[in-house]
Image (cartoon, rainbow, N blue to C red; front, side, top):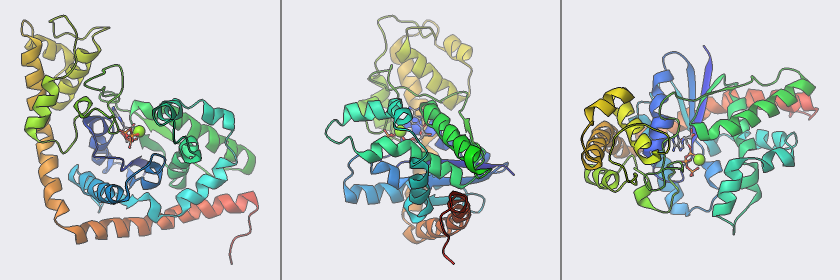
Length: 329
Ligand code: ATP
Ligand code: MG
């Protein structure tokens, strides 16, 4: 079986973007692959977090991933900071990553523009920690949204460079970007991706928003001054809504255009809101049940981390040995 690795940061409640671009696809891979999924809490420290929030969001994210359908009998689910090899391998890889290549990362440029008072070294080295996450598990496939393409290229470059000097240590991972939903856009600024750390709550749908909130946010979604529900260049807002509606209902884009021919944006936005609320309802309900059982959640992430430490430890030791570091006896 091939290996799959992916992670999500506990920087807030996941959005519809995280769900359609990543989380929704993770359980679908469980039968065919050996899947390893992580709540990457160390990554979230690159932006200032309130400790009580971070703790709550981390546990909540474990429950949400289970609610999305990750089965801990089939997949590994763990919290990144429970496996020290992530930070350790990241250090080794830092020494094989150039300042110039990290300076070209668009996420670094975006996030440092957003937080000019906290452009820390962790934010700069974020892609190296992400490379370590993936390479530790010898992942073949990494299911991510389109925004992670550049980081994936870097992970491949660094792995290839390391292997080129020291022999085959890491498997070279491929990004696995879904055909639909890879880039869900903001409901307020549809040229920007939907992000859970946006300061405007109307810009995103959270997985835990109730049906009324979801409807209200879709009704307020920014569109254009025309009145035709068609997918066309320049109609960023409508294109985004059509794409969301098409994924959650399983209808094709022409079917959606046909369904709303002659109808106004108001009707369309309401229909999208209702369809999304309905699609997220089972996730929300299962999540509420899971959250009541803290012992079960602890059991899942404790056992997950144990297994992850064993796999990650092997790759880390191999990298150390190749570099000439003396291994503890
Ligand atoms: P942050 O702003 O804190 O980085 P985020 O919403 O980008 O939050 P991440 O934890 O960084 O969330 O990403 C988790 C996964 O969700 C990644 O695979 C990422 O590619 C995917 N993803 C994030 N935003 C979107 C989006 N708007 N559309 C599709 N996929 C997305
Ligand atoms: Mg992100």
